[in-house]
Image (cartoon, rainbow, N blue to C red; front, side, top):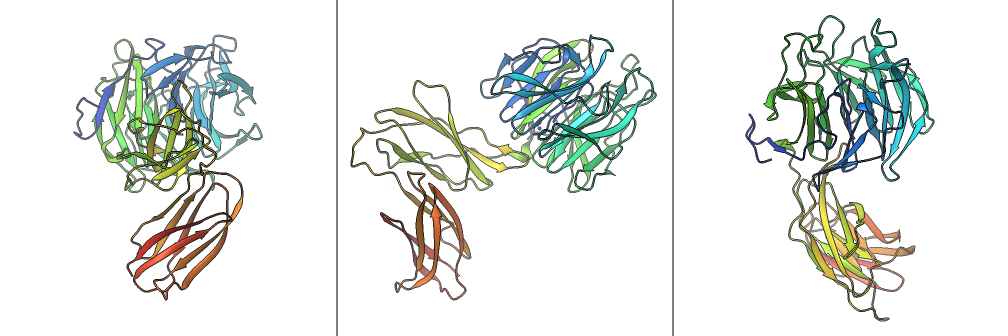
Length: 497
């Protein structure tokens, strides 16, 4: 996850043109809550969530359908200028301005998207404030800086939240400011921009949670009330303004800058086609960013999708369904070069809920437990980065119909070897139509039938094992034999030394 909203814009992570021709903007459905500013935006799995824009309303965005859906109201009531982020499969939102005395809040709430419910957690450890900054790294959340109760001296403290213990722990001091942007790239957090009572800042700083240290990075340029998010291994900050108060003749930005942590450099900005604004919200889902609303000369409700050219994750293609029985089938698709893993989803016709299988290493998957004489649909998705998630869209919908149930039906079994030919090591991917534990012996035989490698394994439905060719092996054809309790499976392998 990587989205958060600072003060009025803290976040986490194509048909029109931009200043970089390969980056694309696509206008999507207007925000469901109407024209707003200062909202919190974050993403959970493949959905975006927006709230805390002066009311208790809370909205979900589904990029697959381009539909906004109003969810359960925020448990803390009317709120603005808050902080939100995601940890795992839950969302968290707290602090901010309230319409209840003392008008600044310290409460902190957990959102469960499956149950569509809010649960109050331990109050933020730093006390009441608004316009703070936050992000999440791994299984922890972080909040700091902002305007405290009484609107006096700004605060620069920084706190870590552990959802397992429901405890806040004070961490290394950041520095007094508000209206900054926060996001996460990998296992580091970043804060950029912001302002005090007199000026706006261009500072950009990296937080290492293991060392509990802040390290200054290349300045982003003076701006506050901006939007920030990360996609893959890059960070993005944009929009916002560069004066201490939005009531003067300020400069309002219309660009999005890209940050590369490997080189500690900012790239020339991409022009946002929605126009200059500040106090927008944003988040990222997979390999795309989303942002919208905010102030121009009026409050806006438009919403846009950003697709950076350098992070294309190819959709699986050439799908096929083979070995179809009454209760199982094997799903195949072409290998995607940049993919680290694949996800698939399938469902029976007439049902709405997809069954999703994740972290599939090979370009095929056996699914079992199906209903005979039933039409099924399925799709595949490439996962090109796991942390943070960069994925393709779902592939085109495929279909197949299971056969009639027969007592003689055997569970579908699959043995794949890749790469094949192999030059050093290969992955053995064994998939069975049962999840019962059973032993398997793996043999690697040369052309003379001699065993050059053997190992014993326990299989529970599937086995992924990397095997390195023995140093004494010569180039040529080999046979991989897997011996189970009730069957033997074989596959040829070509070794090119």
